[in-house]
Every structure is written in C-alpha cells, then in structure tokens.
Length: 388
Image (cartoon, rainbow, N blue to C red; front, side, top):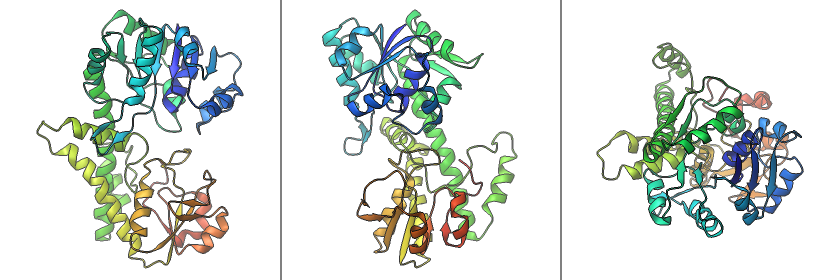
C-alpha cells in the first residue's frame, strides 16, 4: 500500500517504521528539524526500537515537510497528530486532526483517512458529517512511551473502527508488518472503537489509582505496602502486574484520556470515572504532604520524566508534587539531564548529579535509580518494586 503518515510523534513514527517494512510510506511533519534528523537516520524520540530501526537501509520510507507531496503519494492517509485535553472547553482539542483532513481534501477529495490520534467518543461520525465524506476510519493505538515501536511490532490486539473491505486491508497491512502471529483483530463501529481506546486507558488509570490508594493507606498506618500488594496480587483475577505505587498516573495519555471520558459521561450516571480523575489529585496532595512533613529547606526533584527510558515529562506526576511543595515556600531544585534550560518553572536546574545530591535535603524520585544508592537516606520514593 501507498501510505502517508501525518504527525511524527510516538504514534506516527512508530506506525511509519512498522509499515515501511512492506508498504511504501511517506511520513510528514511540520517541524523541519525533526524531518532532517529522520532523514539522517536519527530518532527525535527516546525509544530503543525506533533508534535501532531507523538505521536500517531496507525500509520503504521517505520523510518530508512537503504537505502536498505527502497527500499525492497516499492511497491511505494516517493521522497521528497530537490531541491535547482542553481544561476550559472540557474536551479534546482536535483541531490538528481537522486541519489535516481539511487540507488533504482540498488537494485530493477522494482521500481515505485512518485516525490514530486519540479522539472523543462519537467524534469520527461528527467528522464525516462536517466534511461530507465517509472515508474516515478510527483505529486506536495502545502504545507505551519509550516502547511505541516495540508495541506496534508485537501488538496485543488490532482494532479498526469500521466493518468493511478497506478496514480489512488496513488491518492486513498492520498484520503483515508485525512480528507476531495469531494477533486478535477486531472490527467494530467507529464510536465503539473510540470507546475502547478511552475505556482501556481509564481502566489502566484506575489500576494505578487503586494501588496508589492502597499505598497511601499503608504509609498512613505504618504498614508495609509491599507485603499487602504481593498478597493481593496472588489472586489470579488480580495478578502481579501494573501494581507498583507511584506519585500518580501521568504521561501523555492517561490524564487527558480519563478527563475526556469523564466529559463524555456528562449526561450519564456514574461514580467511578470521576473518582479516578479526583483520586490522582488526592494522591499528589498526600505525597506532597509527606515530603513537607520532613521540614526540608531544599527539595531536589530527581528527573521530571514520567518513567525510565522516556524523554517525555508532559503531565508527569512529579511536576504536580513539585508545584505543591513550592506553594509552601520550600526551595526546589531539579536534576533532569534532558533539559538544557537553566530554570524549570523558576526552579534551578542542576546539571551535575553530585552537586544535586549535596544540595538537596530531600530527593524526590518517582522511580528509584541505582545512581541514587549512595544517598538512599535522602530519597523519598514510593517505588516499592524498583520497576515500571
């Protein structure tokens, strides 16, 4: 297939590289610097598989910042542009998706689109009505940051939000480029596919929130959270996965997807969905209070990233902790190797790890790393299992 991908973040670039093994792919992004990096076989993202994969010489891929060229290449346009949650509108900002569709249709009105961006429930049908075309399909992604290409090469499932021959052709393209056999493929209606994406991520957020609240109870009562979690996880219906306490769920997907699902529930009776969103605020309040109770003069924030092997700290939970501590007038410094700036939200960025350790009375770390072993007595973390 001749496929063009619009938007080269984690989702777009992972799909580009996956499909370019056996399809003819043209990948477009508005950021010239990103395109230049990719043309030189360098990844703009921290992802081991992407960094290795992009060096291959046998991929059928061309990177471009020429929008019209990408449109004219495509039998199928994959849209993977960012859709951030707008707190004021209580809705995803989907303008990037609409901009791509509108501009493509002006050049090539018969174009078919597969949306990989996360969108609200019911949005695909709204787009079809708005643009007067039935050629819009939604196919959700289930990728982890830092493991985006790996998860595309080894998919847990493939879901396409249309029951048609062209939907099957797209699913077949994903299948023949994956490394797995016997992948479960599900064809649904578009609105149900949108629901699958948001309900899946909200369940993951629920699980994070549950084990965080368990941990809050254990810490408040002086109990060993690890013993409780290990015992709970021995029930095969619960399992011992995705159960490591943290400062709250963060990253690019879970915060915005849970809020969007809550917004979709506006006229539907519910208790749990709103509680998942609220619980994340409560957890951050609790963690901040535990740190403040230590009466530190200077708190060091070790890494802003959401988790290990990631360069993304958008919406990372530790930023919420940082803001709460600063609101109490406590000085905060930051150690984040991926930051070139001298300040991060008016907090000094310390480039040298040794200096950072020396300056900090308490070191706050969402995930414990071996390089903190020599200052364990200073570290505050809820990373019980030293993973995830």
